[in-house]
Image (cartoon, rainbow, N blue to C red; front, side, top):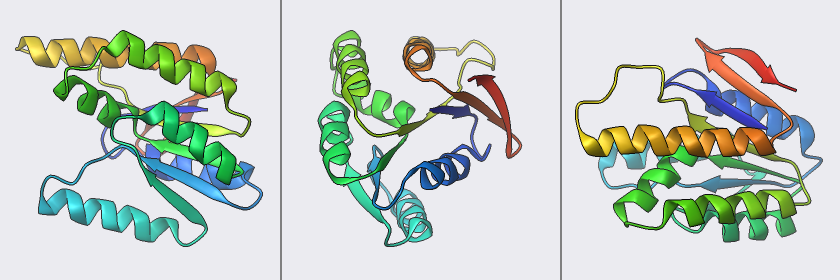
Length: 167
């Protein structure tokens, strides 16, 4: 399942609920965020507290495919939050994004347990005024399209409400 939406749209909460509904026991949360400041440290701690002890947290700011494989061996369902932070990390490290997308697609297809992906929908606003932001918007769009093609269910969140796009 792919859950798309804007900031504070309810996508993470919805994705967590869906993952908990399909997971029979152990759940894995793959976190792609990095805490570069106090505000982000607080946000990460709050999210971790909201998940509770049922969740195994795997930090994977860069190697998401390997983390997905690891999580699938240890959990009944996996939540990845979020793809756009992962993309940001890859862009800042000047990684080959096409290869990274292909590796993630391969890991998704090989994953034997349900996976719920969270990603921001960034293509609904105005055209960004700088090249880096335009590249990010384009790369995020291509990543979302590729993951949506692989997922049986795709949900768009707006104002806390799910809109089924696929499935």
